Image (cartoon, rainbow, N blue to C red; front, side, top):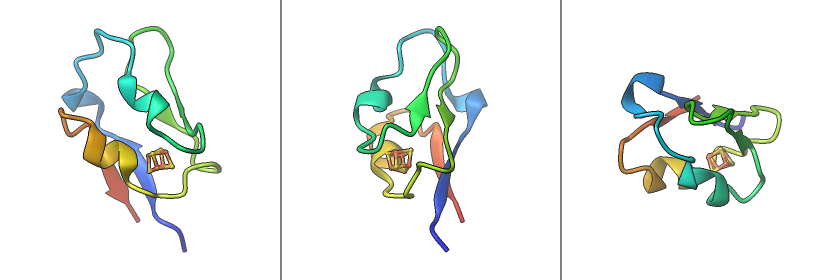
Length: 63
Ligand code: SF4
């Protein structure tokens, strides 16, 4: 079973357009305003790019 990613909202400052959206190769990340992004688990492949990219550690692989 593929691993997925979840967002740790308490680690996200939620004060900027999330740059990780452009890093996701399948467009699984979306953001409403400046809120923490959400992951579409049907699209997420668990590649981990957003996990490695976010300097706040706001993405976590959740099996
Ligand atoms: S793990 Fe990969 S596919 Fe899933 S949201 Fe992050 S960048 Fe996108």
